[in-house]
Amino acid sequence: MNFAFNRHALLPLAAFAFSGIGLLSPCSVFAQEAPAVVELTDPKTHVYVVPKTDNPKELVAFLLQLQQFQPNDEKEANEFQEKAPVASRQAAERILVLVKDEKDDMHQLARHVLIANDIQALYGSKDPKQHAAVAETVVKFVAGTPKFGQDHVNLVMMLSDVLENASPDEIGSKYLPQLADLFAKTKAEELIEQAEIFRGVARRLQLPGNVMNLKGKTFEGKPFDVADLKGKVVLVDFWATWCGFCIQEFPHVQELYKAYKDRGFEVVGVSLDEDRAALAGFLKENKLPWIVVHDEEHNGNHPAQDEYGISGLPTVILIGKDGKVITFDARGEQLDEQLSKLLGPIAPK
Image (tube, rainbow, N blue to C red; front, side, top):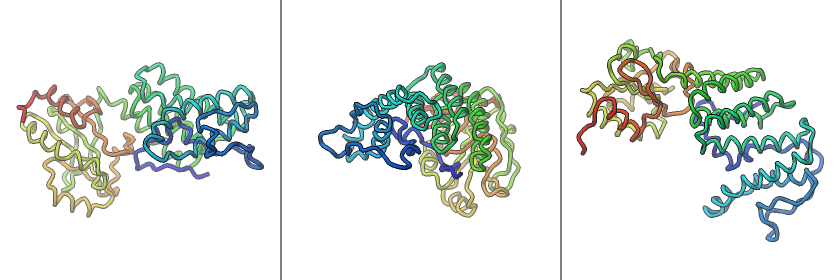
């Protein structure tokens, strides 16, 4: 079985669909003949009106058609974002009333829609109990599925994005290894690889208050160990020349580096470029003033990338003078605030 995702790219799965229904694939209940439903283009039928029917197949068809709906402009897109989650939840809840067999494809699809909605809602929640409850639900649902497929992969990936970027660190570090176990059990090579990324992300989320392991060689070939920078505030920046967002950050970081270098601020840019020639050309043209680490031996795949589950760029980690990680929120104004707090304010421009 092949699964569709890219380990080297950020996974903005929250944007898959506003309610998560974009994660659906047609059930086998449609393998022979799909039920007749009103076309979404019919002016008499609104796209978000759930059919008043006791036929679960019609409700499933509504969900699948809602997924396929393409907004024509920003107004329609905003309406979709507001109304699709409500409509999809109503239809899914009705399916569960009509189909009690948990192994039935329609029951599974309805559960999938509701869980995807719950995952999406976590981006707006700061309640650790809510994050933990949804994570627990996903683990049990995927672990108990009679037919593990792409839909379940998508659910796990969607949750992993929340656990990494929106959940409290302790929730992410607890449940990401459990998601890794789910993928590892499939014996699918690409999912096993992704499982190791989950474990790495969990290790990264456990870094605050602890020492980060980061060794290697600079671009010039000199030995490097971040432990040698103890006594300084260190910004570790995982980046690549092909990452536009990374490059956009550089002018601001350079300003802060110039202002704080003599106060004990250092930047370590860990380049994940596979093309060393491209990196060499970039450095020749831009002359970054800080340390650049690059693992030429492993084609830019620095060991820390796997150890800490770095699957999206830029990823930044701020280390305090005691050598222990402080935070991952160290970009833009957040970096200004952190440095001002740790090393003192600088004169305003």
